Image 1 (tube, one colour):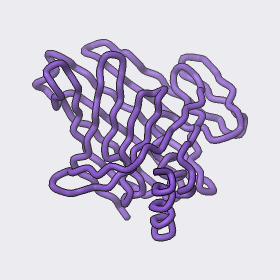
Image 2 (cartoon, rainbow, N blue to C red; image 1 turned 180 degrees about the vertical axis):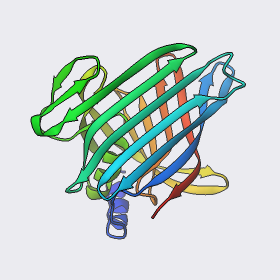
Image 3 (cartoon, rainbow, N blue to C red; image 1 turned 45 degrees about the vertical axis):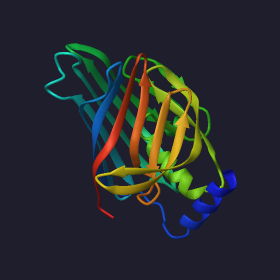
Image 4 (cartoon, rainbow, N blue to C red; image 1 turned 90 degrees about the vertical axis):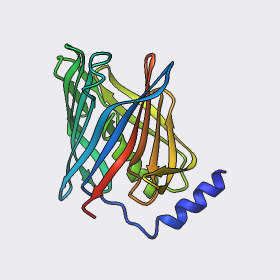
Length: 232
């Protein structure tokens, strides 16, 4: 299996040169329950690019029919630059609400030249040498690194959030063909055990997410791509 993955990546990489490209993806949001998997809302990923500078936003909200049972929203923003082929983060923010209660609301400034990250809560963390990303821009880092290193099936990043900076390992876990709107999309699966996160990344759209599956406590959420547009 490993040799097959390397061979296919090696065929793809000379044909496509990775660079940050603005795109917008709209997703259906599902939750797994005892009654089965239910569509409960919508989500979006929007990447804006100006030369080497990027602003990456994501939004997930439950639909009006579900708000009585589960009123949820989450907004994330990641800002940074692509420098010498690397994703360099400078800012990350999260606002998460359940009903009328704010569960998360924080900002993180990343000072790369001084190797530390500063939270709006007042905490400060030392960053070790190497790539530092957040839980949103890690999608960009993965797309970049899978493209540049087709023979590598394990990627480790320093990832910052409200709890600090930790090393997280992402494993390439094979290929999967996904049917969306009667279109077959070839994807590579990537899994992070610590985050309980599984990604399906498109092989032909610079490894952008097609599905995102996340276990959050007792809940399992899945985002499934509905529409995608790119400036490329």
